[in-house]
Amino acid sequence: MARQRASELALSEDELVIARSELDALRDQIFILKCAIDDVEQDLDPSIDPTTRDFKAALTWLLDAAKPLVDESITAVGPAPVSGV
Image (cartoon, rainbow, N blue to C red; front, side):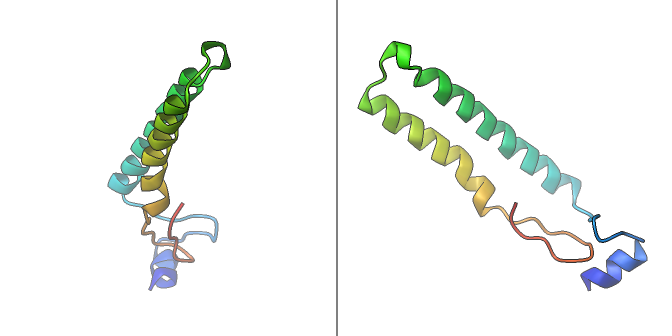
């Protein structure tokens, strides 16, 4: 079905169609991960001598920010089905 729809839309093998809401959700999740990375880099600055508790909190924050990106599947219409990121 995906190949048929791609043909109808005249898509090349390098193009796909994604719902705007899915793209927006993906962009939001990437922004959250970027914020987590920025926070962790600041919180674990060696000049402030982070504690074990700081490292655990940073790892938890990074995992919480990254997991939705890994768990998310993207539905697409194109030459080949796309899942995950």
